[in-house]
Length: 62
Image 1 (cartoon, rainbow, N blue to C red):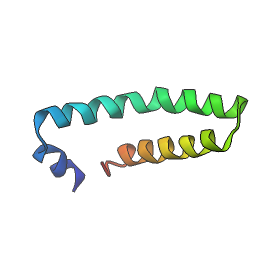
Image 2: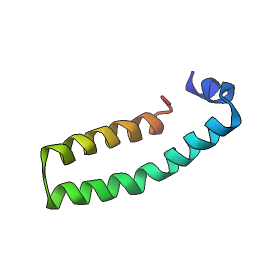
Image 3: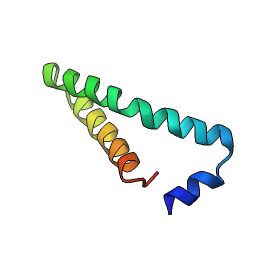
Image 4: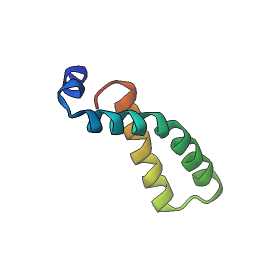
């Protein structure tokens, strides 16, 4: 269902989704390293949000 949904979006929105999808892995790695060295509650929550977004892109839910 998400594949068809992506094609219904305007071209500029499709481009932003593609950019965000490609940038999520480096952001996730940096946040994971930061959480390992400075584990605060905010860092753990932010890592969880980034992991959720990455998983949603991986399984084509977005």
